[in-house]
Image 1 (cartoon, rainbow, N blue to C red):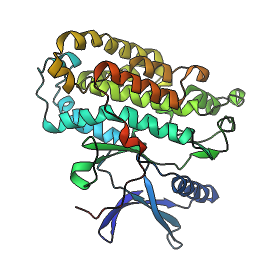
Image 2: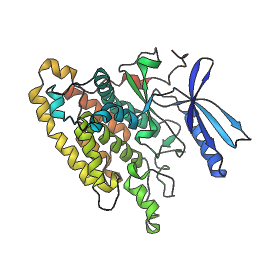
Image 3: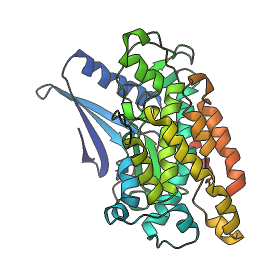
Image 4: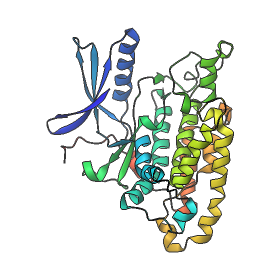
Length: 343
């Protein structure tokens, strides 16, 4: 349960965790511990905690307050068009045949920056000098999106900024090797890696180990969703339809990898359209990026074939060379946002 409170004119998100048992107490303590150790521009910040014994709950005060999570952000971009049965394709976007609103233009431009920001954030978790953190629940609802123009005076290269949140089931380790574990844990099936799902589904698969590559798979699935959203409302909706056609009712990315990859490969063919139709001036304004092959490798069924998070960062930096579409990632080198009074 999350609500918004104000303390000394500073708006904070208050996450309330109710004590059901000893495990919920430990999860709350773990989340606070992880966040207090992290200081990164794209990770939510812990301001304080307090316990209400009568309510049997712990309250975690977090900063900043975000207007959206990634799921609601994408729905804000394309939801109205889909409700009206209007779909835009990448071809129409490139040819300027679709009338995008100022919000949609700024949102799509910001969305293209999230690739580098989120990959830098996960690389920070996986590559910290003194410890390694495995998030274990990377998904759109755990990625917050803040409107910097509406709620901040801090400089930022795009209107919207992404933050990784919810470290409730995250675990810290002394090394990447130690993060390779086989014990069962909570997870969100839609975005989970195949080895995580296999570990939970079958007692015979209890020896299937999952390490940091599981986070990379989940991030790759999020990237696939972002890529399709950047391609237009038609492609974003088609990604969901592709997963909903599963005859077994499995909507997960790992359970529908072939269909997801097929859709991404169709988008990959649109690179030629972009190169052929965009003049020099239009190319400088392009918000559409195609990290297609990268998404596919991140969602490899074999964990050993997935790139490490730091390799994802390097590949995205190289991608900036071909399209001028991926924004600079200089914002990722900073520390957590400074506290600001509400505007």
